[in-house]
Length: 179
Image 1 (tube, rainbow, N blue to C red):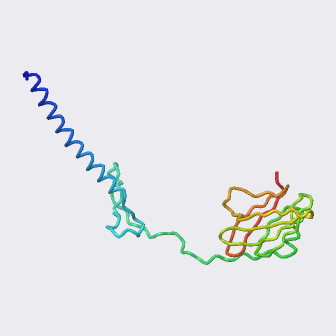
Image 2: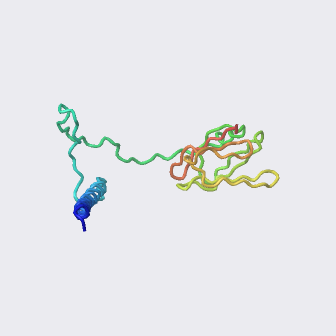
């Protein structure tokens, strides 16, 4: 073995050792970062509580801690049920444009000009509102699980029906001509 070969081996040995130490340090830092990011301040954590210290700012004048303020979110209150629409309010839907509050069993008159209905509300609850309709020819339409967050109204022929809100066993619906 020549002198240049032995010095090259020594250099490789030192580099391997340095890489091993650097790799270990990197792995430990990555592990520490991962464990630090896993903390929870939701109150469900049985470990140490989350730090209440404010973050530090580069501006020394704003580095003083500010006292924690109590939560200003309102306390949960009972949701007031919606008052179901009267028969007269329901009859106003015959023109295809109305906003009504319904419960299970409510009958919404048909909108003949829009070729839709009459509708019967067969369910109202957390899963949504179920409506069914049988037209004069015997054709049945079912709108099942209609919800305010479904992405838009449902349409039967030329009538659109949107669920605005559901409260307990009542729901507010808006009926309007489809575009």
